[in-house]
Length: 445
Length: 44
Image (cartoon, rainbow over all chains, first blue to last red; front, side, top):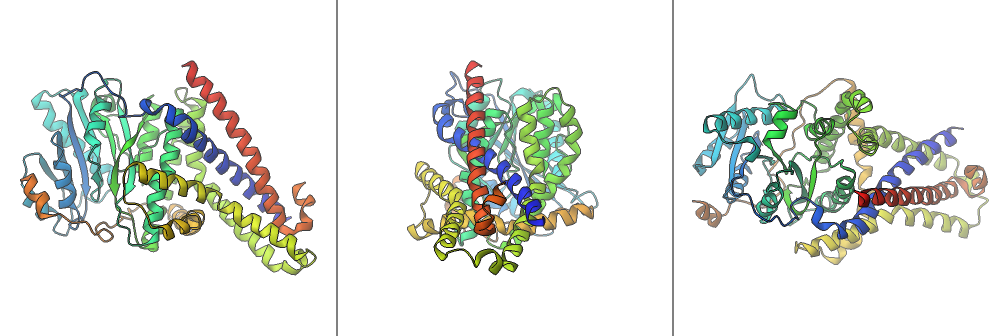
């Protein structure tokens, strides 16, 4: 009886996961190549709007290792004004920023006891500053573009061209860039995160572009200021641990949808340590649970389409589904192990071998599919390619990477249950070998 | 039903059959969804 119940739970989770992934696969393989020019930034506008003004917000808390590099890289884009918000760092982040001394770099600071209240508050603080800057200048909000970039991030060289192409159309309001990890990986965990962001999430976002359910990621989001102020208000970001998805829901509830940029991307740091990886993911899962407070509004909404609602439900139900599916797998494995002789002793060895081989082979299906996409994507964008032996490892790694995320789900539910909402911050600068080079510094000066 | 049919092959056999069935069912469902959605988008 126990086996039947858990098999049903697992079967349901499997159906939901496969249904979502296979739809994404169909859109990625068949629809996307035909509709390439409909994706954000891939259009060729008749005229580029040269009056656009970009403010890129970079939240900073103890980012001394990376913040200088990030600011310098962003300042290379001549239309960008960079607003770094220091959230009461106790390292040398501010000193390092002051060394840059550039007219397009704004350093604003939050001090204790008003600091460390979450990323949403930091971003809202920056938006207040930008509005205060623009109002006396009478600069129009519909020509003002706000971006959010993590302190460890760098934009691809073609980013501004794609942003200009997108925002030159007055109907384009919000876009999320594709995300990629920095190359020169130190271990396999970093490669797996790169595949996850660059190819797997990319596939899901393509599907969401069609269903108007693209989710903002914290890093690489850009929007036109006017519609956000008009529809959401001066402080659009909330205090959920997943501030980006919270904003996505708020936008969708106001008939604003996010577009997705496929052909330019933002680089960010991949984690090397499984422990830090689990902590980061537990924060994301907990942030997902925080977003449940919007469920009544989503259910009642007359603005959202049925497909949009389904997309949000899928996102919100994921932690629960993953948790139950993981428990089911553990229980079924224990039952199989403890009743091994009873269940399998009568089976001919060849049958057993066929069944086990089938199971293992099936588990590699998505690993092989995503490994293929990743190989194709690296080639297409002339990114450094992996060695053959790394590619052989990929299907196994992709298929089984999510096992370690079970711990992050447990941790997230535990913290959520205890109402522990403090920010488990991801440390930057420990995992990347990039640094500010003297040449870059001189070019900027 | 599946569980009963394939119990003779143990839990591993049942799981494999459920995997294959779920794959077939979800593939058909997603193909239908995609075709309908595609038509809807083309109609504008």
